[in-house]
Length: 364
Ligand code: CP3
Image 1 (tube, rainbow, N blue to C red):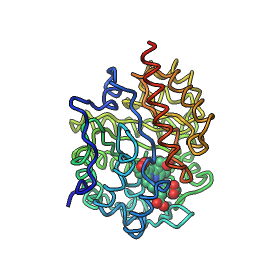
Image 2 (image 1 turned 45 degrees about the vertical axis):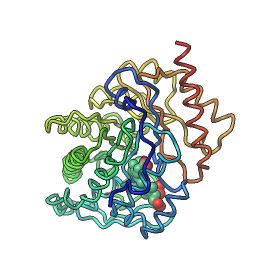
Image 3 (image 1 turned 135 degrees about the vertical axis):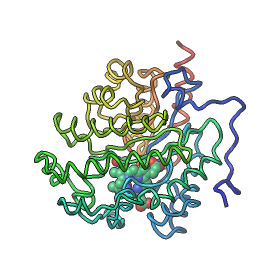
């Protein structure tokens, strides 16, 4: 059974192109593209219901029909320009043989990697086969999306995934992982190499299954100083982008090196990603004057503004839409939707963006 059965989305008006791809390819979009990180998830009651039906978060990720259903849920409510496949960055270490579980209100727990022997024990052979459910989800969702909606595949940045593997899950300040990075531990460097190659394989498989765009979430890039960031964030992501190109994939890559501030500009230049996703602490004026001339910019509304709603939300949206040029901007949040967000505030956010974008474009 396909995802679409009984849950079709409204078809695109004839001739509607994918606004997200237009911006990523450097052309003028028919409207400013909008999607939201974690647009599928706990703030939606229908997500809670499907997750209950699946049994757990991981069982949901492993069931393509249900994962596909969850991917599409936000698109039934909101007129978004992209869907992001429902999965998790930690499915990759699990496919490499690490134990993974999610405890309620505690986040992920992973078996720890802390030596050359641990890294040597990772099972790269057959990894893509063990991630088959993700590619099947991509395939099913792709078949049910209207033509103007882009489908985004993703993976974690090697540094971020390594930090979860080294810490054995979430941690306060990634101190073990940062220590291993400063010490240039040979096993740490091997781990980064393994995760760079597996990220490339995983993204290539999502592209081959139908992803129009891929995003690399290096959520903890801001942990690394300038020297370490070049070596363990920018260089591995550059290799992933290059590796996809070497396989003949021209699919745009969005890089989310969260928390690197003024570093986004060099990150874009070095890694050659098609766009950078930016955290909310980066000044919007700087994004417009220093970053957008170099690379399209995705971001960076504080998800707290959306959870709160009201006049503060309106002011922050207006600041972004008025400051960022529509042909160099992908409207998004600076990080994922917060679980306490009322869905009506997300609807209001989208409504305000669309109205202000129209007005801004009419004025120019
Ligand atoms: O809608 C989407 O954006 C797609 C789905 C998606 C999930 N995780 C689903 C998820 C994406 C793109 C991710 C990426 C991810 N996963 C990142 C990078 C982005 C970021 O948030 O910084 C990271 C670091 C992870 C690892 C991860 N997964 C953690 C630390 C947690 C627990 C914290 C939390 O938010 O609960 C998860 C669980 C997770 N991944 C949930 C969802 C919807 C919540 C699971 C639940 O239903 O309880």
